[in-house]
Length: 319
Image 1: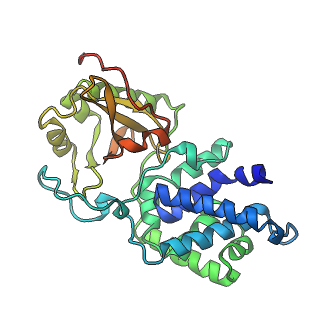
Image 2: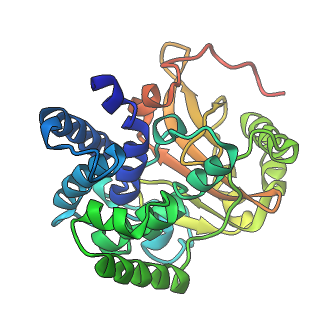
């Protein structure tokens, strides 16, 4: 039975992450869900509900408990207007931000069509938009519109009536329609255009070639650097920030899928002469250009979660 429960870890992680917006909290919620389920297997009645419905009911209760009194997580772009200079200000506590998650921990589906839906629903902007909803509204939306649970199953998961689920779903849809998450293309490793764009971005970044980098950005692109609320908008302004000094000179990017989007582990030369983990970088693409850049500073200690090595050989000199 343990193996059967463990098979639900990835889908449960994706569900809890959408509700909580936190990598560590999601992992804790899923682990507690599996522990409670293993202890209460005698309570499970396959005649009344599917195993996945029962597990999501346990996970929902745990997540709702965790969300009581919790701060709303967001993206830097949701915290205030764009900055006009390069002063990052004071870092905020980590519980203020939606945290990045590796695709490998989020997805438990193999069908390409389902993968597209799953990737779209874990984009940073979508998860941040979910955090603006009440906990029960976001649960209803994820259950019905992302996981395709029936109204009756969703009512069972939430421990309420079908009418209550439909009402929460209607409010959630209306809220997202009024303030929709920003658009971007879903990661498609098979798309030659997207692959070429990312390869050119990596080459320009590692060469510290600011004009080439700027040419790859949309005019309305944004750049943020959690845990700072600071962010800037516009290709010109981003290029100016990136070109100030040579802090990124010698850095190297290693690709990894993050939140259904292209991502990278950014390595920086350390005292040993080797390249050490520095930050996780999420790159969102729209209409063939880089639209959004989020560099999660101070995330080097999470590289192992993303399957990234702890160090690299020193990079070659810029081309």
